[in-house]
Structure formats: C-alpha cells, structure tokens
Length: 152
Image (cartoon, rainbow, N blue to C red; front, side):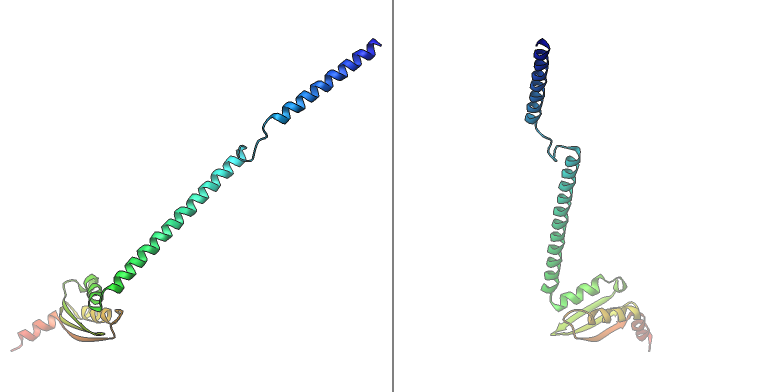
C-alpha cells in the first residue's frame, strides 16, 4: 500500500506542478505584434511612410498655391505689363531702348535695338504675348540708325 500511496503522491504532486505552471503561463502577457521586433519595425516603417505622404501632400499643396498666385499675378497684369515683362527679361534685348504702347489688343513697339536679331526677337515675344493679336513695328536697328545719320 505504501507504494500505492507514494505513486499517488507523486502523481498528485506532478499534477499540481503542471497546473501551477499552466496557470502561471496563462497569466503572463502574450507578446502583441507591436512588441515583437518584427511588429516594432513594421510600426516604424508605417509611421515613416505616413510622414512622407503628409510631407509630399504638403509640398504639392504649396506648389499649387504658388502656381495659382503666379497665374493670378500674370492675369492681373495688363497687356502692357505682360509685353514689358517679356521684353525686359529677355537676354537678347539687353541694352535695347524699346517703348511700348498698347491699345486694345494691338501693341506698338518703337525705339532702338542693338541688332536685327534683337528686333525680330522683340516682335516675336510681343506677338506671342497673351492678349496681343497684332504688333506695329516702329523699331530701328542701332547700326542702321547711325548709318542713316551719316548720310548727307
């Protein structure tokens, strides 16, 4: 009987030990995907992607806003202002003394340009300006003006 009792005791002790271990494991918090190394990396990548998307959207909004401002500024200029801006900023026309008169959609250019290419460029830029349909050319080329003055 004593062997039987010892067997029962061992069996009961083993059962108790296994039960305690199972209860202990059940009470331990299970790792969530966010606390595992893989979950932590995924969370950081998701956060970085979200941040990049927000930054890109913000940059796109800023570009759209600047474009609209520039567009409104150009449309706010009259035809005279548009022609002046185009002629003033063109490198081929530096040193040219061009006067601009706009009446309706007709621009009249007068003054002196340094060479024939500059004259052609001034006329071309003026013709291509929004709101201008016709150009009246009263420009003179500098070397032509000098040679006419030298004639007796």
